[in-house]
Image (cartoon, rainbow, N blue to C red; front, side, top):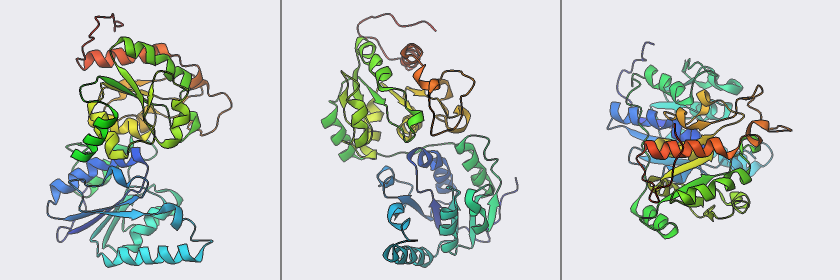
Length: 355
């Protein structure tokens, strides 16, 4: 791929990646490469209000631009919301970006890139909903094949940034670590369970997670359940685990995961945070494909049931056999393998499963 040419290095750069949490994590290597290539450029990131706390105070970002998706999405039926969206677009243009990078690849994100009036606007040539028509330079990324990180890196290559290093920079502040310490005492060895997921078809049943609590305790680990406030309903079905759902923002969750002995969860955003942090982890997959959305660099941590209809990529399923028929045994075996690989000591000298 021949890199695009810049007459002068861009000084104002906008990354458009509003959501979701896992997708934002997957885009972080592009941010890192931008900062390495153009260290003096001012880099802004357009992000949804729901995901903004993950990036607040990020050392490689100069400015966060909050995008109120819920409000702006009502613009077609609420004149006040339409006016706000128009003002938002005007504000983007007034910031005088040289380069707009759309990593979302939808009509809305492409339209926002267009409204910057940046001289160079790049995004995936395969952008859905005709989003590609707003770019000055559509980049072939190979979608739908390949992992999201690798597709984003193709856009980085096209900008002359290269593909390496693939580095996920996440941040937590002292205040976040202090908040995390109030929830989980310093020095405690613990596991984090993540039973939630946006798609119901991605959720391993709570009783399966509950079956892990006893064995984790035998391994010397206290079990916590993390997630959004709504996930407390799932946490209530996991006896013996301590419910932290809705009690952390995203940076505080990062601070917790930095200390966790292991993270176990479904195909959901916080699992990708754990992967980016390099924590021991187990990812439970059903309707989605590991090669597309698996924890990058940690595909060996994925546990799934090999059945004919999986992956189906469906949000709706009458039987959900891929997850309901997956017992806790294989997940526990992977937990033990991950702990052993990470050098975690078993303080009680209990036997662990062989490879």
